Length: 359
Image (cartoon, rainbow, N blue to C red; front, side, top):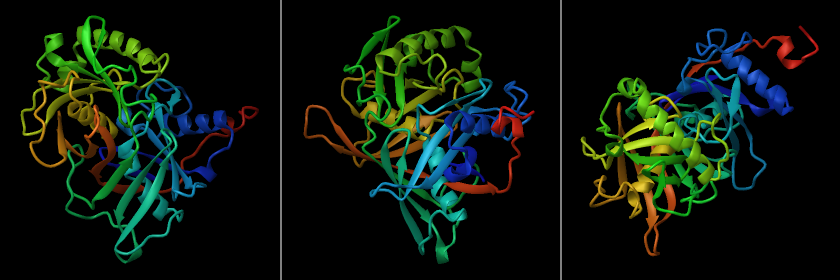
């Protein structure tokens, strides 16, 4: 099936329907998204949309764990790379996992809501997902609105637990609140997504430029990539030259009532919005005293909702924080998403992809 999850869309597969051999499975996924003639960044021979936000895959199956209902593995099919990347989670695609499971018979729906615990294979963590299922059927219509997706839809509530250090091993993987890389002060953080925060002013930029302006800024992108490659090593991610993490997030003071304004690169293209778990990591860095966000952000004076501004709107993150120790402990992050089933059917994979002995 193809579903829109949050501000992304992707192909959703039952794990049992894919080949068990990892190499064959990846060839199948790449062929489904890109086609067989080599990915020329257009993905014209496959079902991808020639954008990182639309070149995503969810692999879903019943969980063997006692504390989860479903297992979800996220696969980023790299646009123009003929490759897959499993380094990260995707919270947008997660929003479609429980709807897909209900639609495909993997999960029985409740009435009027269905609560399911999803094991995130990529980060070995748990997220509780709540979807609307009136009369035991998946409901997509509603009044919930999220920036980055048109119109309104039924709410999908995602409550993340224990995401700190999910990819890098710790919330502050370098052990520092601030590091200096290529002469620039940065904060490296991982609360569900490895992110490097950088003050836009340190590059002589406002941080309010459009994605098109920043994508045309060769000087800026070259320097960001130099920093990203070094940050990847410091964040225990190894050589990230061919990986989509860490994300690079330029920050500036908020202008629309949020806590901070962001421009995020994933990894070389400035995103029109911000990823779900990227927003969680940015909000987390803003809430930790002493990071590069200090003095840039406007933290909420009451409540626990952190609104992260991005080029096409804002992303609200609810953080459950234990502030009793020297550093905050982040127990839960809650986010609102929406999802919609777009299509269901067959994607045709040439025989030679499955079996290299065939033409």
